[in-house]
Image (cartoon, rainbow, N blue to C red; front, top):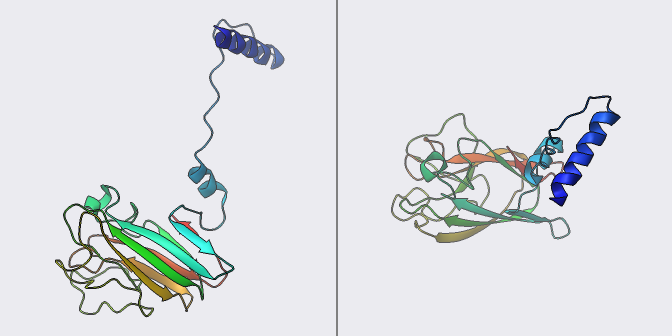
Amino acid sequence: MMKRSTRLTLGAFVLFGCGGGESDQPSPAPAPAPAPAAEAAATASGPMAVDWISVDDGARTVTIDLVAGSTDANNRWNFNGYANGEATVVVPAGYAVTLNFENRDPVNYHSVGVLERAASYPPIFDDATPVFDGAITTNATSMTEATAPGGGTESISFTASTAGEYALVCPVPAHAVTGMWIGFDVSESGESGVRS
């Protein structure tokens, strides 16, 4: 009862203070505050910080926790819920990157590699050579020997030595062509985070 009385008093104050007439209706509730991620995306001029990317500028390192099949998006053929280039991971040039990869898809094997960005990807990769040494999981083009479904994990480490626009791609046959890729930019300006 106390809350209703406070709202009615506040509503009357607002109406009279703004020159409005009397009303026996309580004033509408204020709009909820935007979610932190939405607010960061709306106000940030660069990539937004996310909890699955951590950067240590002193040590010049980046740690990325990348999850395949984390949501139902794109039939679970996604990275942290993103597919079809909907997001871009950004890391500073020259930093050592550790990518901790987990496959939560309950059925399909997945992999990840930092490859050249392309307008489209082939159904089967003749060559899945990463742009940086070590920037690809083992057996990346295999449908039965890549990172196992249901929680398989693998960590890879590489240095993001050359600034440019690349992509995180799953080279398992038919995965990238159906959208299992997101951008991977190496920033000369030192930016880090995710653009979506």
